[in-house]
Length: 233
Image (cartoon, rainbow, N blue to C red; front, side):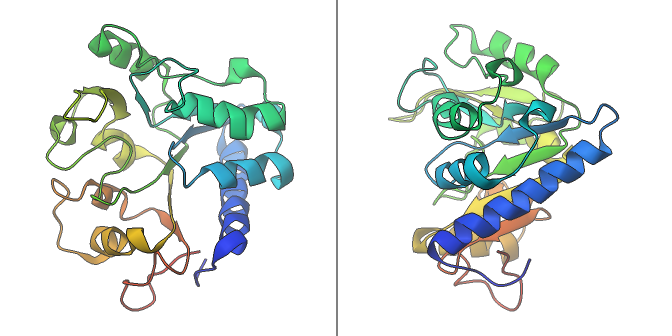
């Protein structure tokens, strides 16, 4: 889609596009099940709420996975799992058995990463991502060791400063996913979005560039620094 809506119009536009992609993924799957890995953070919450209320999806034909997770219990306020359960799974009436949590709260993160890699579909039919002010996506942070991972599909991310340890999907997962969607809104995301989409190729310092070929669902503020007609809605 072209153009960049603001406010609630962006939520509806993003939700509508995601719903269309999920239906397409279900149609493409041999068993008719759409498998999607979701992003955490504040940006996708209203989109998940819209999908639950108005997406019109057959949720019994959808499985939910995660692109990253903090090393916190599933009921912790910073848990991506908790956010998805509250904003999408519970209001949509999705069977929790269809939700595959990243167990980043386990003591052995390397073992948890290996276990999740065995569960995560390969390739992922649908991967939903965000972008941070520093250009990170999922929990692929600038300069992080996970950025150089070419074999593991899920990797541990050590704690650093005030940042909690995490699990994250790795570059091979982004490269092989059939449908990659990136959500971004607000003026604070304008500079990193422009760098990710149009800046010099430097994924070590701007990891979101690894999702450059995906569909970017942006509001007007997040697309403000993009040159030409590259903005998406």
